[in-house]
Length: 127
Image (cartoon, rainbow, N blue to C red):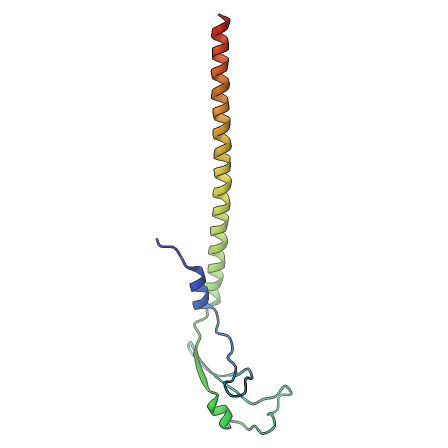
C-alpha cells in the first residue's frame, strides 16, 4: 500500500472558510445550501441585525457579491485522519521501545555467553 498523504487529505476534507465579499470585504453569509454547493452573498446586515445604511434586501451589491463554493468538508474524515496519525505515532513509539529492548537483550545475551565461556575456561584450568 502506498504512503498516505495526511496533509493533502486534511486540506481536501476541511471545511471551506466563509469567504469575504469581493466588493466591501465583509464576511458573507450563507444564502443557500444544495448538497456540497454553498451559495454565499453579502447580505448587508449590520451588527444590530438591521440593514446597513444605503443597503436594501437583494440590492445590486447583494447580487454582485454572490459566489458559489463547493464544500466537501467532512468532520468524520478529519476525525479518522486524527485517529490514524495517533495510531501511527504510537506504533512508531512502540517500535522504538521494542528495538531498545532487543538491543538490551542482545547485550545481556552476549554478556551471559562471555561469562559462561570464562566459567568453562576457569573450570578447565582448575583440573
